[in-house]
Length: 218
Image 1 (cartoon, rainbow, N blue to C red):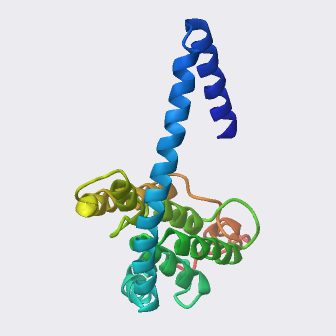
Image 2 (tube, rainbow, N blue to C red; image 1 turned 30 degrees about the vertical axis):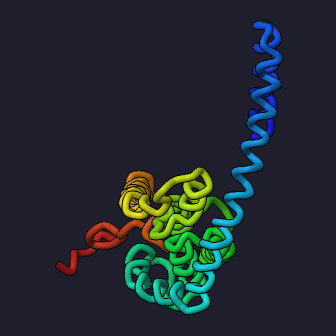
Image 3 (cartoon, rainbow, N blue to C red; image 1 turned 30 degrees about the horizontal axis):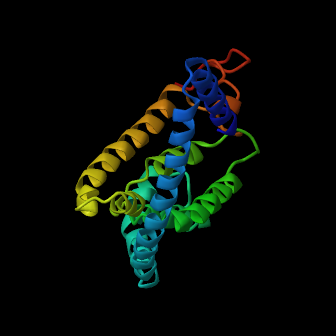
């Protein structure tokens, strides 16, 4: 990202120099910097309010309640993960925190979930199906309270910054359904190598009658 921004800045300066608009470029840079500071200060207050409310909800046990409600669904989505494994608990807490817009709280749970899922793999290597599915669900991030976007709209002067809750819930519901369907579909199209001791490692069945050519028991 730093390289991309550096290239964009260099191209902007070169284009302004060629067109003789360096003064306009300098004025735009100064104005954008002033607007960024004003936006950041306004955003800090609103973010503090929403994160404080979400922290109260977290301490009140709302995150844990959502995690318990989502446990049956995650058992069906992740049949290879034992229900009592720490990975299941970490995934539940991550998705519940994302649902409430607690990005700061969701990140450590997500990292812990990926670490625990790594322990379930028979050997180090590419991501397992469970890790790929969890990553897709975490990226889609079903959200009930988009605190960050609400704060951005409030800082920008929106008259009703929270009116996007319904639209955000609908959009993220669609995104997580697509993420799960894509992960499950790709798993069927491109199955991984069979586990050790699976059907691929078993010897082929003997022909009828056995190696000695005797009569078949059937």
